[in-house]
Length: 579
Image (cartoon, rainbow, N blue to C red; front, side):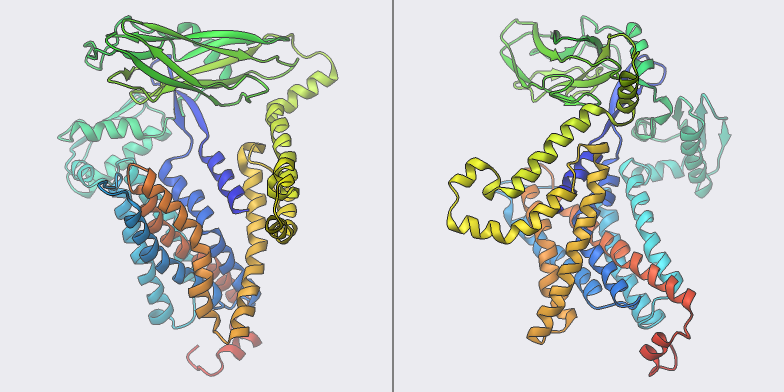
């Protein structure tokens, strides 16, 4: 269930969209989810789901009194994350290598919040209202979570960077071109407020550019222009296809921002366009796109290419391929061939992308094309040239395809069937089952009552962008969490161990082991330490604000509605006249 949950989250957060650059007939590919927001919301929820659901179950099972399993598990998990996981990550780095944190601003924010979270718990539990959570305390604890997300996002996009904040504080004037008015602002907080209002105007008024005409460094101005949301320039597929004929063709020489030729003897790799249009009909069709080498042709270089699905589904709309292009000395062009599969009558237009990346040698990519200097992306629009649907069946198929993407549903159904069969077979397949040992059969017999219901009740992440899998796997994790909570209590009762000790030691260890292996792998393979270390600080904060804030808020509101005169409340706190 946890693996399916993470697969659903990866599917949701990997969604991309095409946006039009302001004032140009060009489209670039951007991520729908900000990486920092995704890590602190969906990713953190994925890694912390057992602790959060265990705490929720603990509150409901105890009649809105907080039990010992939930809070103790979260505290024990935090200690394990901070000490054990970080120690393992440090020792997992190969000899002679160093890992640094790239996004130090986000790390600083999450680190400070993770410390503050437990100081806040100490204050509300021990000092302010001892052993009782008031409604305002529960609500504030829960609301710290969106505050953490907003502050981390603002830091990631540069709004709360220390140098940028100093620049904004010294601004005298902010100009909004295309939708706002010139305004004067004094130093200090007034200038900061003016800067934030200008950023809001950029998003609401859909102005073209925001520039800070003052002593702000150019780096800050670029951050404001490039990192603000580009939602104002979103257009539909039909409009994008209509604008393809006006798209600017690639120059014979690639130029930089100042209009000078990009210096690269090995060459600059690029597609001719950012977007092309091909046609699909009642038969398969093959097309060719050319990768150009400009500004140099010295030496032998290679680039890898792959295909990324957007609305088109591999195996149903096009054949997915990947490979490597080799440019020998003085070779200026290489072709990539792809196949568009047949389109049904009434099927909607689709699109996918061809990506060139992972270059060898000193070759670079065209910075003026979609993808920038790291890679170049070509978006392929598949236009259905079949006649418009006429029969009721074709019209129904067209309507469903517009709502659900029927090819994606077929692919999901095939994967779902494969997932169920894999749970039934020992070792996952008929071939592997034939060579299974007695130990394999014993393990299979133990786990098959758990695997089969989860496989039946958890659809693959292909359906509806991964949200169906997200909800179903979350329900599955919740059911397993209830069972684990009861088993933990039985285990502690049998050995005479208090629930708090069981939760801090055994349950917290079990819930943190997946994070341990994920962080260890990231520390060994990633270039930076963000995925391994920032995950710890962010997870600790999310555990408190969601894992304790949400159930405590619900319980506090429930008791506020019932009133303190409830017999259960009086029986629980009758020995303390101050309660």
